[in-house]
Structures are given as C-alpha cells and as structure tokens.
Image (tube, rainbow over all chains, first blue to last red; front, side, top):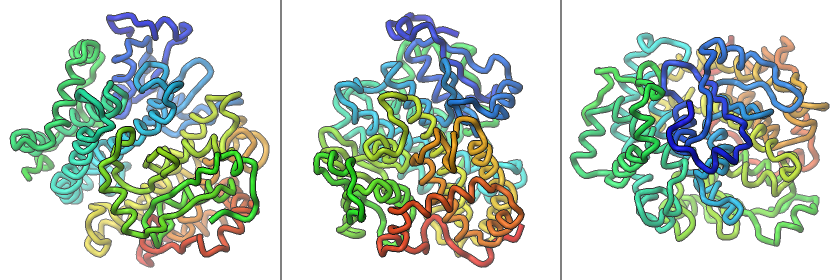
Length: 260
Length: 260
C-alpha cells in the first residue's frame, strides 16, 4: 500500500511499517490517518485482516506496556499500540513531516493539535450525532425525527459557526502565507479540515453548495481544493484505497439534506 | 491560587505562571486542567477577569504565532495560547510530572493521552449530550423528551461499556501496581477519570450507587477514592476554588436520574 513517490521520511522510518486498524468499508475516522500516511508517502498496512482484525484488536487485553484500546482507529508501530484519531495524528505528524519542526518549535504541535481537535469536534463528531442524536447503538431509522431536528440545528447554527472559526484562523497572522491553517506550510490540521469539509459536502450538499455560491468561508473551501490537488493526495483519491462514503460518519439522507 | 505544598516543579517553571481561562461558576471542562495544576502544586490564575475575560479571549484574533481559539478551556503560558482540554493536559503533563518521564519513555505520553481522550469522549462529552441531545444552543427544557431517551440509553449501555473498559485497563499488565491506569504511577489520565466518575456520581446517583453496591467496576471506584485522597487534591476539594456542580457538563435532573 506504499504510495507512488518514495520519500526521505519513508526510508528513515527504520523500515518499521505503520499498521492502521479500522472498520473496513467506510472512510470514517480512519480516513484522517490514511490521509496523513498517504500525503507523506509512508509505508503502511490497512486492516488486512478485515473486521476480524478490528474485533481481535479491541478484545486484546494489552501487554506490559500497552493498555487495551477502546475503539478504532488504532495504530500499531513496532511495539506501540495506540488509539484515538487526534492522538495517532499527534504521534505520526513529527515522524511524517506534517507539522513544523518540533525540535526548533516544540509549541507548534500544541497549536496544530488545537486546530485538529476543534475540527474533529465540530465537523466530524457533531455531524455523526446528526444521524445518531439519541444513541449510537440504535439504528438511524429509530431516531429519524430527532435526527431531522438535530440536523436543522447543525446546518443553521453549528456548521457556520465552525466554518467561520476556521476562516478566522486562515485570516490570522499565524496562518502565514498560502492556503494553510498554521505557519505557512501544510500540517495535519489541514488534512483533517480537508476530510471534514469533503464529508460535509457529501452529507449536506445543499447547505455547502449554498455557502460556496454565496462566497462564504472562501478560505476553507480553497483549503479543501488545495489539499485535494496535492500530488499524493490526488493520486490517493483516485485510487481504490479511497473508500466511498456510506454508513460511516458522513451519510447522505435526503431528508437530512437541509436547505438553510 | 498556589496550593499549600511547594514543589521542585513549581520552582523550575521559570516563574511563568499558568493562566487558565474558563467559564466561571461551573467546574466544566476547565476542572480537568484545575486538577492537574492543583495536584502538581503549580502556580496559576483562573479567569480573574470573569466572563468578560472568556469573551475577550475567544474574540481575540490571535497573533504572529497563536491562532484564535474556538472555546474554553484556554491555557496561556508565556507567549503560548492553546485550547482543547486534552491538548492543554498534554502540554502540562510533562511540565507538571503527571506522566512518565517523556525523555526516557516518549511513547508513554501517547498511551496516557489515549486513555484521557477515551474518558473525555465517553464519560464527559456523552454525559453532556444527555441533557443536550438535539442542540447545545437550545435550553434543556426544549429537549427534555429526547434527553430522557438519550439518558436511558447512556445509563444502560454506554456508561457500563466505558466503565468496563477502564476496569480492563486497570486489570491490564501495563497499569502496574497500585490504583492507577498506567505504569504504576499517577498520571493525568487518572485525574481525568476521577473527575468523570465524580461528575457521573452527581448526575446519575441511582445508577452509580447501584454499580458500586453490586461490586461492579471496583477498580474504577477505587481510583476515584485514591485520587480524592491525594493530599493536594483533598485540600483542593475542600477549598472554595472547587466549584459546585450546577449547569455545566454534569447536571442533576431528577427525571434523568435513571434507575437501571
């Protein structure tokens, strides 16, 4: 599953590949990890054992150094097993060159992590709860009315609030030159925001098209395009490794496609 | 606001105090930061400017190095301004001695961060959504029926699932000796779990009392007691700095106090 362009980083990774474990068949939260690995041209495996591998990994009692994990995404790298999307990205970013040089500028990681966590909160977890407002254990069909109510609130209030925030970040001095959120170069927060905007365009096509047409959040939509045009990301998006949206975080239900 | 016992760490912090900015009047997400600072005996200020300070900080456009922040809790330390509970704890933990020695064992931070993030997800964010399942912008009174339905699901399914997970962590080899989650010594993940259990006992007294009485999740409840007995934490909990639960994350509504 190595990408097309070999990198220095790939060669310096001591030939230990990254192993991602995530539910097969959906981009889901695993997609944030995939995009980081793909952008860096890192060698990785992606749940080659399918659903069984996910279940086995969750049931694993851990070992002398690693606690058991609660849920995927899970990253295994050498002796290390960790979970939680933002945490895996935090581990990978300095290794994959997806954050400013942490030796020279150690605080950059915390600034970029703030941005990634805020995007995951408001543009990934909250959209998920739009189709599961009562319980993640119930089917969508058993909470349809509540989903409609929550989606209306999300599209009218929360979505513009979060997109406006990222527009302010892009307009701030700390974003530097170019389309990126922090320090004038691509970081993993940009990849996270790309995936969030991409999923939201799939889930709420009416609302997102209206915002774009009205010229709102111009910087956020420009960042989405700029990430999609990165050579390795563009190649990945066309490859069979990029899974289609279906029953994951971002879902299309006609009745939830609110026209604001 | 320094605690009673001075520490080496406090003296080595270059006399730069930590400034926490959080909504006054509730423990909320800020409480996780306060517990870390209090356990370490660190010098800090806590939103001395009240609500106005929170609003001013959120409206601040950032500067050359810091992006604007979306929401509190916010930590200012010297030139740094960062947000997001788990991110602030990640920054503080190595400075306050609340994680294993990161120079000797750099991966411990990612393991502990996994645990803290999982507790915040399932035992803080999900309880919050029990009284705000449709919209954080609507009053509880406008989503009472949905809150009841969500709380029933939470108490019957999600709460035992997360508590069982942490019980497994405590039983794992990586937890080491003693009551703590990881590596045989107190880390900030223990403080996070303490605050979560403490809030859940306030919010769902019937369900949590039943679990304790039935001898379920013994290790989790023992950890809650062990943290509460730490000398600095015990002194803090008795001090006026410890705010009472009210209209924050953990709320008591009789109709949501599900008897499972």
